[in-house]
Image 1 (cartoon, rainbow, N blue to C red):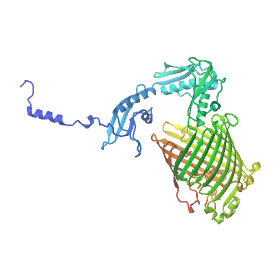
Image 2 (cartoon, one colour; image 1 turned 180 degrees about the vertical axis):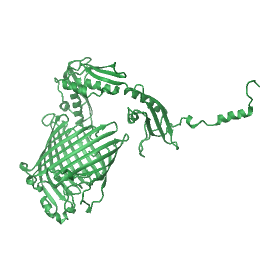
Image 3 (cartoon, rainbow, N blue to C red; image 1 turned 90 degrees about the horizontal axis):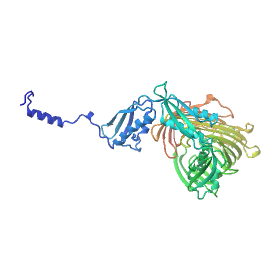
Image 4 (cartoon, rainbow, N blue to C red; image 1 turned 45 degrees about the horizontal axis):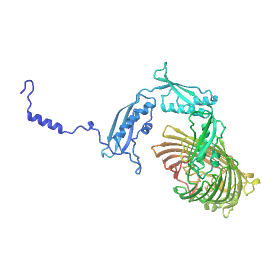
Length: 634
């Protein structure tokens, strides 16, 4: 035995060593094996300057859908480790060079069939922008220079965001391209601010280059569509001052013809800047004839079916023709249309429509058979003006409940309805002028921009027909993104019909105003809100005012939640609005994004019930409605 060493029984020591080796390691010292397990959620700690939603968008590792039929996202260790590097790179590009992922956690649930991920970040101090200056832009008009400085994405006092810096540089260069300088050079100078530690002074310095004009235009890729059709859509001509925006607008016009699957307009690279810019228009033609079948369901129109046939190059020259048929419980019919895109030049179009249509609304039934001719012209700045003439034979019949109400006999006569049959027949001959301005970024699900429209229609008089009235209506919609997952939307509508001589029978019954339904006051059923008869039946109004506001929250890639509030009312007299009579409703909604627009479910609750209303012959007691349909309410 060696001196200085304590004496231990050898057998006891070996048994202790073996026992320690056989004991499992503590769970806290092990990292769970979560490879291939669906990710339930990804959360962040320490993210203050950047929202967790933006960080989640940077990562390839995503949380699985919560819907039973949604997509499952499984955990992959290599991909997750790469995500941690992406987060640090994202912070650095947003002006936080010292940001780090300090730790993370991978937690399996008890059943080991779901994993939760936690990422902890330390953002550090940002490098901020001391001030932003622009030099060398003297060739621009004063208003353009002021707009560049005032609307620059890179803002003094904010972190030095590389994405905003690049966007500002590109915007400055494009502004020069829109004023005759197709080859500008814009460099960025960054200097530490001597009087403000941690701040950088940024200067955008421009060399405009050669001033230029449009030269010859080359068209390639078209086979059945003539060069003449393509050239008529171009908003620039050889010899005009170069403007990049005219090329972009011309490209959009080519797409709007729906003749091309692809359209692109680019300057031709000649190797060196020249005062004459040659452009190439490249197109790829699509199939001119298309037929589409569609089916759907909604709480108001129930089952619906549509058939559409279109020829986008009918008789050549980009003329369009179409046949459309629809059937639903609310409306059904047939419509044929023809469109000439170049009536008196490239900026004036003509459309002729013939229709046989029937409506079966809760308050009335109506049929209209006739034609409508429209001349349209874009006015610039997303504004379009149109002039229309319509000649229609109309027939309206009120609901059986109203017809059987003997107390309505005098009212029916005043409305021009036969008191025994409830029918009003006649010829409607009218002209109208409409002006529309549309800057919304999407037709199906807008998140930015606005939509404004005004209409004036006059019927009868020198136009002939059996009805004489003037109809004025206007509508405004606005959309604004607030952050990355919230869109605020609002709409205001107004309309009024003044019958000639104050005689109410000068207005077809189906043109009267009714509110309520999936796109109107959602706390009520379709067409429930209007002036009521003495027995509680909606009779329609001659003036209406309606407003609605929505907050649209994106909960995931395809799922959204909406909070809405509606207000409105219809009055029995022309040009009369009583704000004290407005009806209000509020409620939540659910959205699921599909290729044809959001799938929509709304629950509306009445804050101000309409006293005395009859629905299906019974006094209305229910203060809520559920609406199911496709597409946003507006």
